[in-house]
Image (cartoon, rainbow, N blue to C red; front, side, top):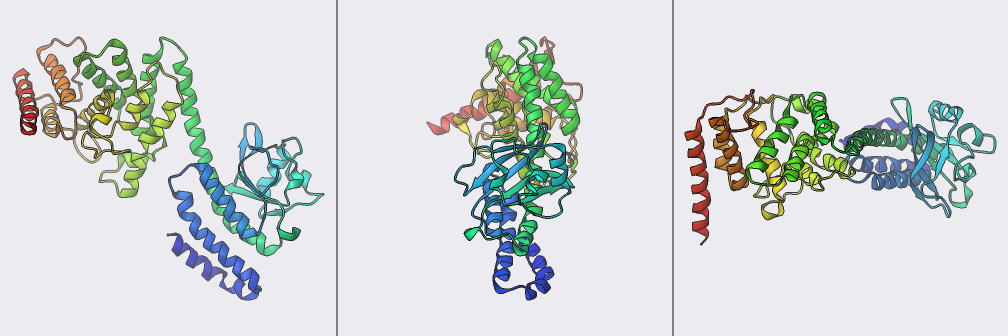
Length: 434
């Protein structure tokens, strides 16, 4: 896509190239080449600090600058904060420049890079930060959808040469794309920070976890996943499986909370993917799979009474044979709470309607889970689920596991048969290995 864009840009710029001198021609070609190389950088999966350094380097090379800094813009409070810097002998890390409304307005209104001089510093920058504006010789506002996202500030060029039209044009070309990347990062950060702050607030209220996290799970499902009650049911199933396996009360509470939060990373996934009736393409699948990593980053910043919640959030799509994601781990490397969460999540997915298929009946879902054990799922965890379903069938569960949305088509004898099949599979496997 970016190689094609490069060819288009060259065809547009060809008449201009004829009119410029050889050095400018070479610089323009290097700038277009940098733009092509930046495409994978801006869309790749890496830390923003690395991307910021690469973007700054590209602008500095295009403009022939020895010194440069990339700032992001924050409106509360209104200020510029550096995220990358090169070449300056003494620049604080991070450098920050508070802005008055007039500064923010002037930067937003600028339509091209600005060459600074003694009469223009005060128009665009203030002197109240921890860096002197006089260090910078040229500013390139970064904008997206007409809003200020950041600023590239360049210092001296070799021999203190001035910034001329060729350098400014090269900067402008690159900064149009860099502004989009900076704005996208800011939106992602804002979303993650809001979610983290909400979770941290709830985690600080002792004795209020279950009710608060239940409400949070409901909000996740309704607003972002459009699958009503999924996270609540996964939390309930996970806790029930844990009870059947004899884990203590604190671990049962941890399983319930992890189930409520297991899909929290989906707040960062495009909601159109959740309603797609067909299979996801590889790019869409990668975006969907990333919800495990995003969720892990969010919950890892919150101090819960249960330290293992972040593992269940990250690894609930891992499988015993290592075929899952995001880390492709399996077997004994998967902690028991993760194995429980994986089964609880799959069980609810099977027995719920999805845009791409109808729900399975309870009997069909359990039969499939028994069939996939032990390759995909821990057979002990599957057996614990069968125990709870049988308790439901004979009316001995204090809190019934089976939900109203399920199609129930099996009785106690059917559950016993599934348990016997599961036991036979496991026992046969052990005999084969001896």
